[in-house]
Structures are given as structure tokens and as C-alpha cells.
Image (cartoon, rainbow, N blue to C red; front, side, top):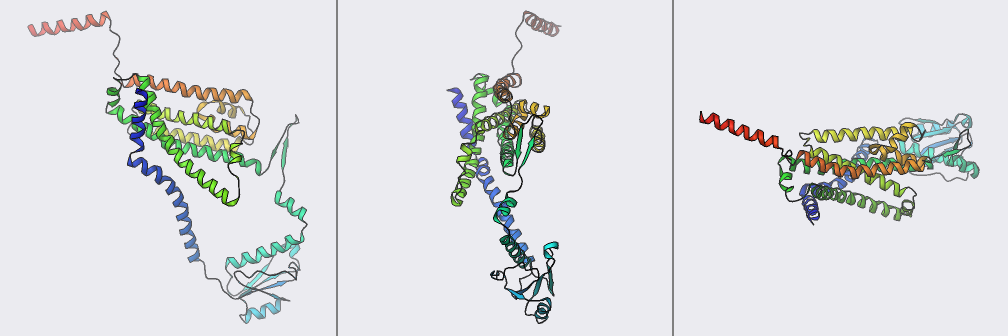
Length: 414
């Protein structure tokens, strides 16, 4: 019951703070409003900087017979007029009947060049309209089988001397990229929530509140109640952020007719990913609590934790570039087993190659053993740094105390 009391005191006291509520609800709104507002401002700036589109038609001279005679030309943003030769187009341009004309010369199929003549250059939307229409006309002449192969692209298979092979294409990189994004966001959010752990424990350690509270509970009870209470504070914040993101993603997928739930729930590595990220999150909070118990204040605690996050971010970038190319190097294997870097290397290796089962099991055991050991380490730090444990009483200590008292008494008598 004492553990639950400490847990609830920490949890409810933190989630009802105005600063916590402001950050919890304000951060996602800021992350949504920033790109939307910035994009709107940028769009308005570009629109105001671009010259207005001339409403007059543009001419087209097709000497390479790219455009089908029966094709209906586009008319957005302006109309297209056909001319039999360049001279007729030049005359129309000089009479200002058209604002410009596009000339597809006879050697277009060899050069791919389209010549444009004008007095004032047409705006980019007009160039884009002409380019897209010419491209559509060319695609209409190409067999569907060839177009499908061009759109699909090549699929490269790497085959070793032992006969094993691995296939890499655009789709095979979706899983590593998704894992990279999830790991990066998890590390970012973990650094946010660890600040609650560090600040709370540091403040109570510096004003000696912990030493008062520890008189009514055991160090382990206090550590468990306080640690998991503050942990629940961070998880509540994460749950609200990820819950809102999940609702948005599912809603967008529903509108577009895309099932985004089934692929996630049926992903074979979902359990491993959750286990690794949860264990790493707990380790981050344990490190933050340890810095708080050691009273690493004055900004040094946040600096040390942020430095650790910077090192792990560099490791994440290293893993994203090198692990897909060679996932079984000694560095990658060792980093997959080391608890602080396992969340970076192990998921990427698993989705890219066949990781031996013993490496996966050993990595998980080391991760969760670090979590359990970290909790008992926090208890030892609490006893060593906050509770002024007296040295065991010995007969020699008693004799020395009495001898000092007698010497003081004799000095006063004289």
C-alpha cells in the first residue's frame, strides 16, 4: 500500500500541473501548426513573388509528330493553338495573338529538345502543362508492358558465394525507414519524459525531502513507488501523443481506403520492437533517476543526458547507413547486444537480414537484466547518497568518543 501511495502521489501531482498539461497538449498542436503555418506562409510568399499568368494562348509547332492529331489539348491555365510551321507561329507571336510558341523540331526523338520563343517568358504552370502533355502523348505510343517495367524498375538480388541471396528494391527499404523513424521519435520523446524523472528526484534530493520520506518506508519501496509513478507520468504523455497520431493516421487511411492497422498488427517483428523500445525507455528513465539521486544539478544532469542522446543519435545514423549494407559486422553484432545501443541496431538488423536467434535472445536478456539491475542500483544510490547511514558502532569508536569527552572535561577543569 505504501508503494501505491507514493505512486499515486507522484503521478497525480505531476499530471495536474499546468506546465505538464500545457506541454502535453501544446507540443502536438505546435508540431502540427508549425508545418501548416510555415507552408501557408511559404505558399503565399511564392504566389506573391510569381508574376501573373498571361491569359493569351500559346502556340505549338509539332514537326516530330509527337502529338496525335485526334488528341484534345489541355486548356489549363491557357489554351494551346496549333501551327503548321514556325513562320506562322512567329507571325502570330508578332501580332500578339499568342504569348509564346513551343517548337518540337524534327530531331526531337534524338535530342529531346523543345524550343520556346517569346517576348516575355510564360509562367512555370504553362511550361508544366506543355511538358506533361508531351509526356502523356509519348506514353500513349509505348506498349503497356514496357511502361509497367519502367514504372516498376529493376529488382537487384545480391547473391553470395554460398548461394544465399537477398533482394533489395524500393519496397524492401520501407521497413528499415519506418523502423528508423520510430526509433528516432522514441529517443526524442524519451529525452522529454526523462526530464520529469530527473527534475523531480533532483529537487527532492537537494531540499532533503527524500530523507524525510525515507523514514517511513524502505528504500526499495520508495524507489519503486516514485520511479513507476514518474514513469507513468511520461507514459501518459506518450500515450496521448501516439494516440492522437494513430487516430489521425487511421482516419486518413480510412478516407483514402487504405488499411493501416492490419499491416502493423501482423508485422512479425512487432513484439520484438515493442520489447526493445520499452526496455530502452526504462533504461533512459533509470539513468535520469540516477543522475537525480547523485544530485548532478546546475544544468550538468541535463547536459550529460543530452550528450548520451547525441551519441545514440550518431549511432542511429551510422546504423541506418552501414547496417543495410553489411548487417553482420562485429560492430553491428556487438552494438545489438550492448543494452544502450540494442534499440538502435537490433531492430534494423532484424528487418534487413536473418539475425541468429541466440543474438536476439541474448540481447533481450541483457536489456531486461539491465532494467531490473538498474532498479536495485537506484536503491543503492538512495542509501549511499541520501540516507546518512552511520558507520557500524564498534568498541573502538565508543572508546575514542569517551576519551575525547574526558580530554574536553580535563581542559575545562584547568
